[in-house]
Image (cartoon, rainbow, N blue to C red):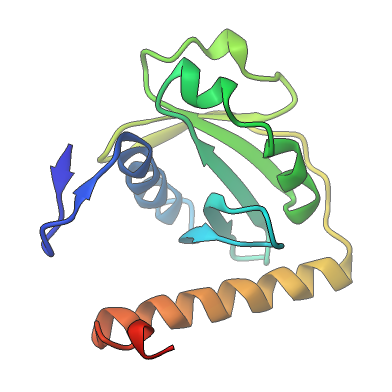
Length: 152
């Protein structure tokens, strides 16, 4: 576990997300964490590429964490590509071959396998771009003004 500058201890899945976000920036993607595409779903990482590609990355810290995730297929309709991010010790044979695979740690990640491409419809892409922008703006404002979110 790692503590952030604000003394928040990150959980294993959050550490994987951090490494994924760092690595995707190197591929010219920007990211947000814990975005809700629709009520009842919360993706670990949503990435937006330079051509408005939308990727979803689910971070799994253990076999139990993966086995308890019964919602992941609901994420597929909200992205162009779907990835699992796991650490180097994770039994990757458990993960569906149709999904992308990222091996990550708290500091970096590597895309091992690209997920199948399922292009979003223009209307769905517009919705996701708006959700991404609003989520990022709220997070940026909250970082500048820590009491901001408690006002709502």
